[in-house]
Amino acid sequence: MNKRIAWGQKSPEAYKAMSALENAVVNSGLEHSLLELIRLRASQINGCAYCVNLHANDARKAGETEARLQTVTVWAETNFFTEKENAVLAWTESLTQLSIHHAPQHQYEALLAHYSEKEVANITLAIATINAWNRFGVGFAMTP
Image 1 (cartoon, rainbow, N blue to C red):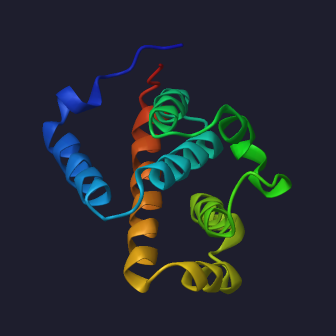
Image 2 (cartoon, one colour; image 1 turned 30 degrees about the vertical axis):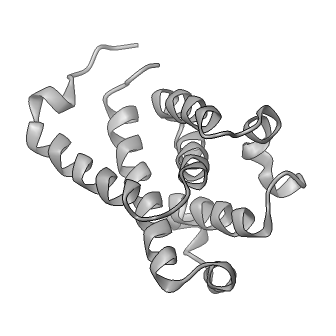
């Protein structure tokens, strides 16, 4: 793999902006384990090896089981995830692959069946933030 810049060192302003987003996500009131599922699933879709490794490990620390971690890529084909988690994982996939899925209304309504409007906004922020982190991870060829 070709060596690329250490982006956070070259642009501390960019790193500071990303860290501010991350702090907003962490302080959003959403469960840590749910945030790690969002981060892991988006990172898998985006092919960010650094972030997949980081968030799989963080999810374990947050209490995720190996069965759930091993099947998050096929979450819809298992019974390991709750309806609430399924709604979040579907929304994560749609927003991560926005040009394909276009954030369908039925997925938005499924979120609102389980979460407040504020929580839906914060879930969406979490998805947007990990997708941004993934662009840095993949763009600068970060490895675990």
